[in-house]
Amino acid sequence: MATEILMPALSPTMEEGTLAKWLVKEGDTVSSGDLLAEIETDKATMEFEAVDEGVVGKLLVAEGTEGVKVNAPIAVLLEEGEDASAADDVTSDGSSHVAPAEPSGRTEPQKGYGREDGGADDGTSGAAADAASPDAPEKAAAPRPSGDGDRVFATPLARRIAKDRGLDLSAIKGSGPRGRIVKVDVENAEPDAAPETKAPDAAPQTKPEAEAPKATDGAKPAMPVGMGADQVLKMYEGRAFEEVKLDGMRRTIAARLTEAKQTIPHFYLRRDIVLDPLLAFRSDLNKQLESRGVKLSVNDFIIKAGALALQQAPDANAVWAGDRILKLTPSDVAVAVAVEGGLFTPVLKDADTKSLSTISSEMKDLASRARSRKLAPHEYQGGSFAISNLGMFGIENFDAVINPPHGSILAVGAGVKKPIVGGDGEVKVATVMSVTLSVDHRVIDGALGAKFLEAFTENMTSPITMLA
Image (cartoon, rainbow, N blue to C red; front, side, top):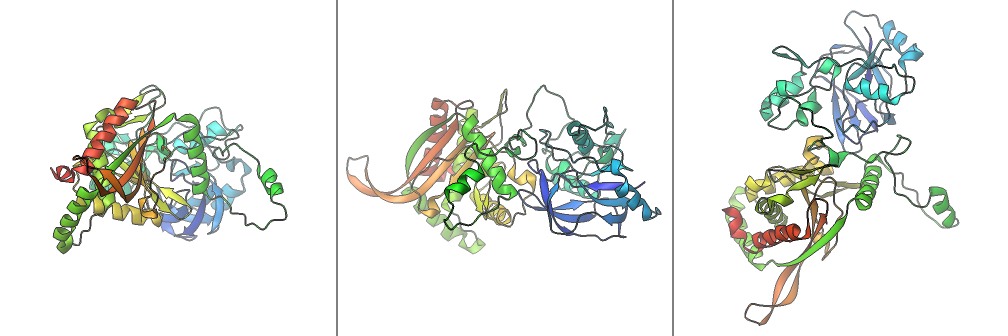
């Protein structure tokens, strides 16, 4: 039976994408786990894998096509032995081309194939499409379980990733056709994945920060309120300018930061930190690590100091989850990385337990892949706390905007030579770094924020303690 392959949602904020490159051609035989295409999302260029076996009957979308809506048909997959004309039957049947699903408020990425012979989607993506389309059937086809008894249905790639990460596939809910576990399900699963239990209105730990606010018409993420494009263009008639089209990343950033400033009650705590002891300690460490090819940056110490401070003030290691607060046990620290057209915040998980050299190595790798937009969703989702360092640009201090659902973000400025009064009352010159902690008052009160910042400062001014 011919099956339409639908544009997948490869990230929680994706509503449309660009089909960058087909990795198959019409007539190719594919198996579950084979790569079908490269798709550009609002965050990265990602590979889309097959979840069923069959023959590629027809490619419906050309390479390089932009703005392909999630759940829109992009190809037709035939069963082995099925005539190629079956692909034309599916695409020519008007009933098979219902409107693509509009944003449904789900944060779980939708992935997999869709309607068989023009019917409703079989799986989670179908439920979203049916809920959004006014002409959809009253009841969507219920997804089949991912396992039957002791048997678990999963793609080979999902099984390989689960094995590498030590995950129990039977504890992961599949989002593919007929409940099959696919790559994105494994990537988004926590290491201690357990069978899903329902909690009223519970917010997923690693999802909310990636969900963009919904537009009133369901078509695009909400944009900042203000003057319309026509009004602004009229103001600059007769002046030379260049229009820059908003890509998915910039549109998402605009929507999310507007949401953050409008809905999060920010307050700010500031400290000046004397860096000279840390700079001397770092210099000595780098001499010893030179033979291993390791060179620690000040930012590596900042990440470690922040991760330890979350353990020293554990109530600050928390996120806002709508109607509750989630207090995290590990120190998962997000670090802002500037990329062309926007930024990523890759997350260093369990940073409090890692050595400075490990943090340095992992951060370099994450930053490099962020700049080439090769991060997987699980690498930039999650965390409770973020660091934004503009010191390398000469910025002495600034206030950062909290990345929801995080409880706080630390803005780090440049280390600058300044006169200070020492403990003996003498005036001397020291390297001083200004930091500002932006705090969500719903999650962290003033005294708790001050306790966290005090712990961070002590870690930075006594760096040898971070090796204990």
